[in-house]
Image (tube, rainbow, N blue to C red; front, side):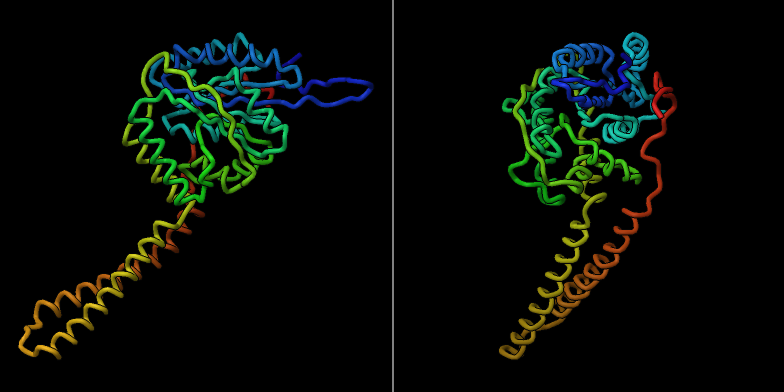
Length: 329
């Protein structure tokens, strides 16, 4: 039976529709690991007879032979689909493209390097079946480098402060969501998407499951310090105006400090008329007016930030080619 079709199960005279699972995998420099990940998904889904599935591979303009591997997988496995980007847009844009192409009742996103265990996807699906809207894999022993672990901690702090992520919730690149969550996520058409922010703005009915985190078999992480900083900046500017509010608060505090210092200078002059006021008066003026300017810039930035969030029409991605996707409408 075609992998795109919904299978029907007849049990005890009752006809039920099998849930379909869409696996979305952003691909970059994964020519040596991608085939193993796909085979692992197929072997696991053969055991999960209550689900049908599809696999969507998104090539983020990888400079190695990843696209050739995707073509080969699409030719040999009817349930595998491929998308090829015209240039590198980043992991989150690749996820958005895969989400839009998916047709599953549940959508599972995972990495292309084999570190996220596809053979434990049943743990995530079980939580969705329990009624949760989103499930994130949690790793007790991460096998990332020190640099990546530091980046993860910074990302954790940023999402808690800027996106109001619950403290007890752990977020990772291995997660599963229901169809209605995906439908809301793909409404976001502005450039530089941030998937975690899209999930958090859609639902709070989220949980974690513990899975194994494997060591990287081939190559190194594609996230450099520049990319991580860009991701964090995108996260708190695309889905939060808190940085602008922080600037406003700092401006207000500076202005109050300036006025307080001005009062102190006046009192000091009254107590000791011999004290020269030139330098003190200059500092008071700088602090007061500097603080007022920051307040104004913060208020203006608040509006500009909202306009930016709403009106930026740069493309999230550009698809050069779709592979084995003709039957998807």
